[in-house]
Amino acid sequence: MSTIAEIEAAIEKLPSGQLDELFAWVDEFKTLLGASDALFAAYDKEEADAQGEAR
Image (tube, rainbow, N blue to C red; front, side):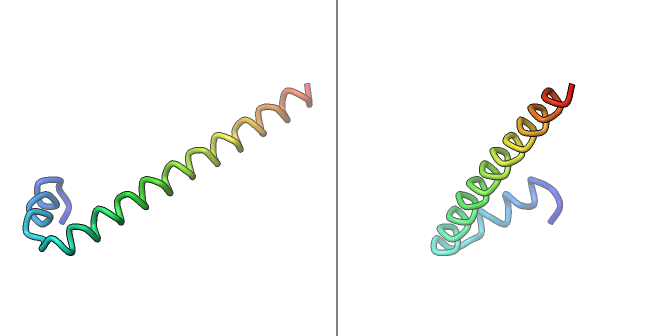
């Protein structure tokens, strides 16, 4: 599967139990992405602060 249409078609065929598992995975994945974004933002700020101090 490499297109959104293929993924959507596959999701439509999932039994409800597996659909629930997919939703749980998506929620966890979104949380991890959010945590990664926050971590990278903190690193970027720390680096910018350090460069400001070095000047």
